[in-house]
Image (cartoon, rainbow, N blue to C red; front, side, top):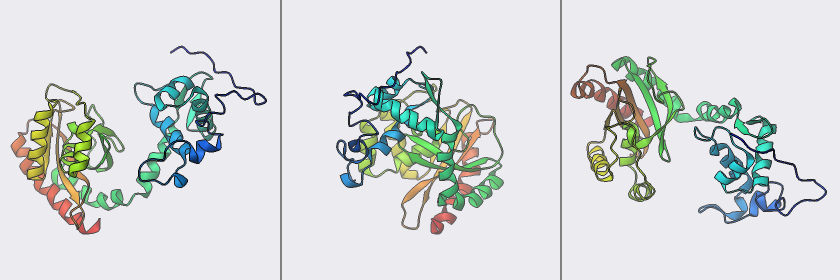
Length: 289
């Protein structure tokens, strides 16, 4: 990627762009710039923090390295504002740079590790995941829904050589996993409508349910039976079975699921072997959540 080096603006003669409300140094950039998000009082909103996190989230597999201009385009900031956020993140150790391009450093993983270390749900689930893994000889996961993705926040069982994202902390498109399909199917009506309104279904294999009508029918079936099966939707060698993880009031907090290679086992045999163990573990956890 080719880009020109960004020159610093002299402090003695700040440009109009430097004085933009997007700038982290502007008072408006911290608390008063623009409209506060719905549900948050403007006095409690720190726009600069939101933008800084947005800069971190702008990096992905398609944009592993970016100039300040590119980061600004992806986050709706001016080049100067994006550059200041990037330089601040570089000072904090979350970003590195060669003077032209910026990229994330491994320090960013501390943010996710802080969640895993402090969240209550993964700790509660661990002995139950172990019970499922021992009872099925498969890898058991606790998954939660985060936007369009399933995130695996706890796991127990044997390591599998699988080609796509079944590691702790991995994010996988929800529509193509058993856990994601289940949690999408059990969303409240308003949340489900919002998900569908912004949906452009992705295709990963020839088995992926990419037709909205087909996916809606499958979600209705999953909701009625209260468990989900996904085969070869994301990976041709992958099968998943999931049950909801509810609290004592019946609210869904995530999903317990097993992901296994397709192997020689039939769908019916795999479900009969795994589903009762998952359901027993989920029921045992209800009063602990």
